[in-house]
Length: 78
Image (cartoon, rainbow, N blue to C red):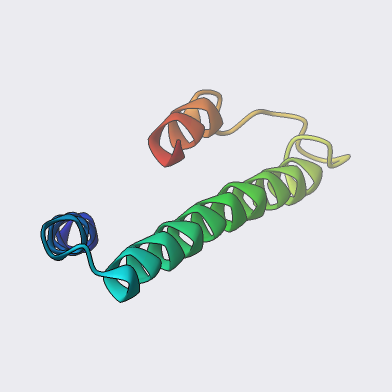
């Protein structure tokens, strides 16, 4: 939340002062935040596949231990 407040403050400063460096900093910050979010979503998909391989698809278990967890986690990340 503090990060979003910081970005909002930078955006306001950039607009009020018509500052090119501030506008550039806000743009770079948004790009980094979007990249990080994409990485986290990708990482979750890989973790889910690995988890299912080790638990649900394993020969000895074949039971879904967390039936609603992945949909809830995906919704929270998005």
